[in-house]
Length: 105
Figure 1 (cartoon, rainbow, N blue to C red):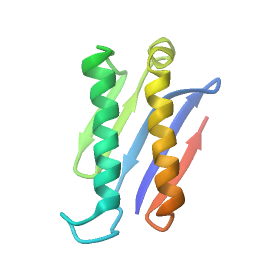
Figure 2 (cartoon, one colour):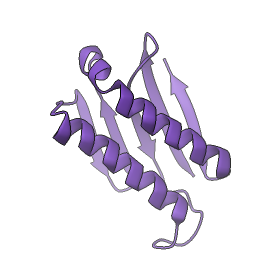
Figure 3 (cartoon, helix red, strand yellow):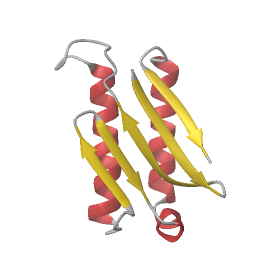
Figure 4 (tube, one colour):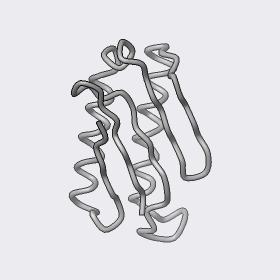
């Protein structure tokens, strides 16, 4: 199961942590994992390479992605983070057995 935690500060998304494989199907055929991975990399790349925001924390490893922004930068990236959260919420509705979603304040 993929666990995704969104972090908020005063109702502003400041980042997220993603951990684990969905195990929907075998590696290379797992559409849930592919959808999550693609959206995650697009989100992080947009924040770091398009908006040129330097995260307070950026961690990437096998089946792990974590990004944390300071409050000012989180406001600048708010639309991107909200879009990512909406996408993940929609995936969790469809594939709830494979995605665990948490909001942490």
